[in-house]
Image (tube, rainbow, N blue to C red):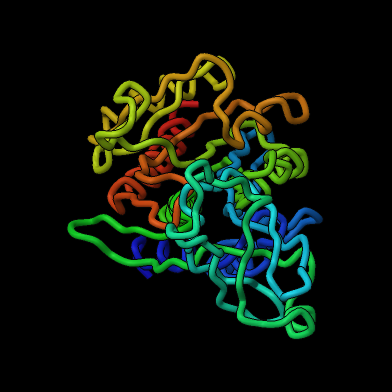
Length: 341
């Protein structure tokens, strides 16, 4: 399958933090031809693509596979559901949204919204999550038979193509990154290298990056390239904090990241004609990289970010070309570094 189809399939799958098994199962099937795949105790997918030769580098290619959502916390006397947020979901989007409750079978629900005619002058326009209810059209007995406390909830969304090479979907944060590292492994499949390569699609990034920390400890790489998404510019966003869609991956520069790897990413992108942008951060990165760097004796880590519009919404938007160029930069970096080691 091409990278657009790969990304859309991954994004459409369900995998709210702590319950990623549906999407990891899909990814495991995709990766089976490229190495031994296992799922660890935290649900991380770890694919051993090639073993490192004696004394050679071992690269970990990482992206997080979980998505934001909600979790059922209570069923009231009328069958309405109470939920808590899992990850950084934007409450502004929730009122009157159609959702899917992933119970014993998927159930369509609607987040309750008070009609404007019944709202008082001082009523909150952006209520707290504790004030919201989900209507699944059932009484309490029916709801208790169909839904368990702890079931995950996602906002209903469609994965679809837009003009040019743009796509929109829920969960492109970070299924776009997952697609990029999978594509990199595909491109490296027939390359003769001494280095080891392990691909990790890690869990629970949206709730603290527990998956990346434990995966890095287990894999024990010497180097890591983490792929996530970052802010793409729209007129309502601060220009200096954003990259641009369709202009290539954003190469991270930060105190916690390997300066050598960042510098070489820039040099190799120039040499190979791969479009790129820079993303400069003054401390940590807010990504899996922060937990991978201090793992074990330390991991030299680089961060590549795919520019994205409308982060943490059901209509996240990215350029397929940016995903492809992220994969190409990973491939050229590894090949060039191995040729000049």
